Image (cartoon, rainbow, N blue to C red; front, side, top):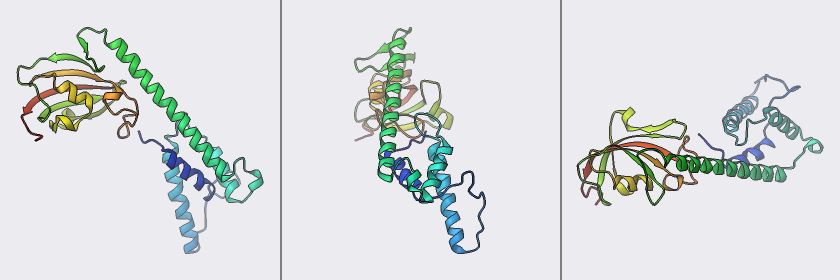
Length: 240
């Protein structure tokens, strides 16, 4: 999921004080009689569409669009006495809110992962390593185990704890080839346990995955991840 950064929200807060938007009593159409009229309208469209996309990912709940519109119109009309924030305090409030809500989301994701792993380790066949990584052997191969400095060819499917698939070489129909040192720590660890020809189900704690940064639009910070990994081939010294 695309996340709103503090910087982005700060910029939006500043822009709220500079760009007009429609509300009750404000015309819903514009007469584009000059190039200035047209560029003004284009600025509004461009900013409005970008803001709409960003507000869809506002942490803490659905954005109150009517409040956004009121803030817009009040500021652009220059009615300073009616503003509940000046520009500096508005930006400070946005920063504080985003930091607080994202912190709560990150803590909740970490707690969800910890709770899952604690319960999962008691399931039949699940092995927990010293690092906290968990795996279950679906098929044990008989080939060599990869070492640091090797490359591997593998099929995999990665899921969030709710079952959402975020990446899959199986779905693409083509295995991936990569160095043991070029993947997340959880992969580096478990691949060294797997003999060539093995298939494991693996659960990777956040600190062995993408940690507090997350990855892409789907992997939130502090996410525990599940993978099904099939080690097809060990390529000795492929990373040297």
